[in-house]
Length: 313
Image 1 (cartoon, rainbow, N blue to C red):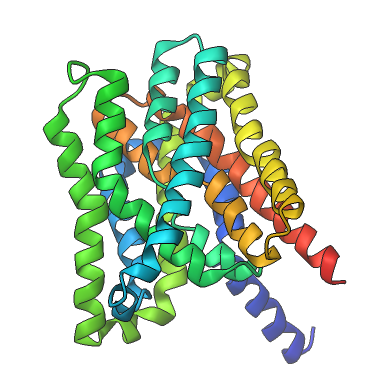
Image 2: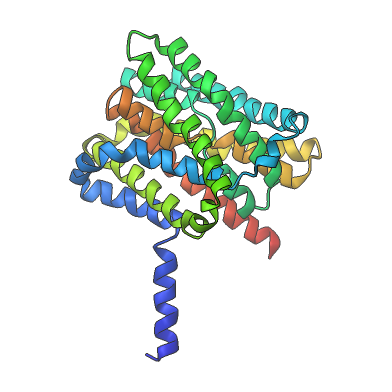
């Protein structure tokens, strides 16, 4: 093997270990095969999610908040897609298909959380309307400070968990990272961190996914049939709903880039946040719906990427 080929192979391996999809699939496999370590990583799930949120919002320029009027429509559309459509579908299918109370609680948490932070980078990857996705996602997260506790308490009642703990976690995972990201931008540190942002984010998701899968390893391996309702809901809320949103976009002759952003906002929930809340407020098993949905969300994103490549070939 020549020196050039060796360098090429090393670069491929290096890039692979920074690839989000590869790391998430690796986390799932390791969680199933060697999930005992999840007991050690359980306590760093919330800090890891806070780190991801800080890095994800670090790239948002402060100027975006200078003209509030331009934020209203994308923010309302984002709330309508993620909470009005996706949350309604998840809630309805949860009532119809899920019999086990613990799993049902997990889906209610999914109903309550905002869209995945990955909506913004995937809008870039899939040639979506990036500014629209950015404003819509920020609007959803600001709205989530009130919406997430309201839905959780409204559907589950305050007797099943500590509402103060919920609000504390919401501040730690949404408001705190938003404030910290502004400090990093103003101090100039964001420029130094930016080259490492992708790798840190991907490995943080690795830790979260490994922990969730590892803690629920016994259920996944010993009772796979009990996960069928969760899998059915995950397929419906990603592939089926995504297809319907895309079809509606073509029907109403929307800009293809905006349609792509709507598909992402309407199919992506922050399953990491949902799992973190489930672990912190309830039990390991309550995080199973978020785990199952994460797997199908990854597959859906890969499918959308392949579909986009075929359309441009």
